[in-house]
Amino acid sequence: MQSSDSALRQYLRTIRRQAWLVVLVPVLVVTAMYVVSKTQDSVYRAATSMLVGTQPRGEGSPEFGDFSFTRNMTKLLEGDYIARSVIKNLRLDIKQETFEERLKVAVLPETSILDVSYDSTDPRLALNVIREIRRIYPQYVDDVLGRRVAGRPREAGSFEVVITNVDPPHVLAEPVGPKTGSNIIFGAAAGIALVARRGGGDVGVAVVVSGLFGLGGMLALSPETPPRLGELLFGDLLGVTTGNLIAAAALATAVLVALAVAYRSLAVTAFDRGSAHALQVNATKADLGLLILLAITTVAAVQGLGNLLLIALILAPATAALALTNRLPQALTLAAGLAVLAGAAGLLVSYRLEIAAGASVALCAVALSGLALVRGPA
Image (cartoon, rainbow, N blue to C red; front, side, top):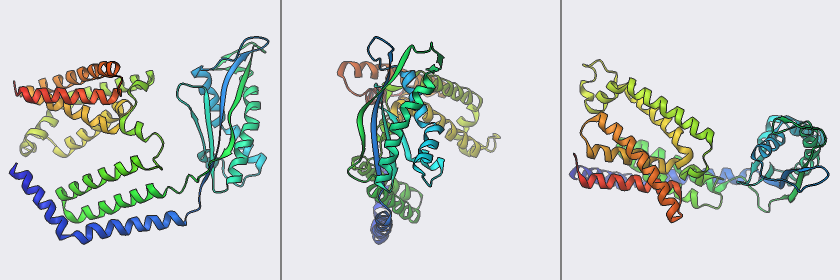
């Protein structure tokens, strides 16, 4: 407790002593980012939405919702043919790679609706591109999928491709760039980082964490919030696919193997770093290996829990395990078991209370950690 108070007093003293630096540097960087944003050309976005499906020739109603078919339709829209044709037909002075970067295609979740947009500093040009795509796309689809659908040959004339205009081509009312709000926030982040370098290690960490946490909240609440920011921060546990599960299982297996191989080095570095050299353990390599394992763990779990909730699932079960046992092998096994228990309990709580699955899992993990800390060491 005394150490924490001392660190806090040091932090406050540094802030008071260098108040001019703490205020002036972020203000100057933010001002520069604002000026740069205002001098950039406005970027306009033209967009349209299409419902895609199939219909048997002669009789029957249109069929929508085939995920494989919708995915193939998206790939055709993002393919080289559409880009080359639009560039040629409109005589655009632009490289194909640049065109493909400005063209964005997204499938609305659990639908067969394709959202198509194109960004340009010329709103009329953006609208013409979307109109041209809307004109040539059905012809191209009919030609390609007239021979194959979802990767499988079909009998000639057995179905028609249905493309319905849900939202006609239009230009959004407000420019989508430059993102002045985001640029200002990132400028403030850069200013905080510059201030932190003058404050030393611990103080620098305190300044960066507190400052960037507040800036992250501003970014999340900003009208210019980047798309899918919520999914990046909090994940989508119920939206993981079979491929995500297979990848996570493979990465988890790799982590288990690495822990088994590097167990001695990691244990010595963590609990008796001063003796690492005498025990022929390279502490620097062990630290690097631990960071790599944490990176792999993050990649495996971030799809379901996001960057923020992932922290709870990494730290809480480990904290609980260390509170229940004093032996490292048992603690590792117990932490994994508690994480599985938190996942199962979180999904059950989410189903019963109809709340977010990822948040439920994180709360259950924290609750287990709290119970373990109350119980005390075994």
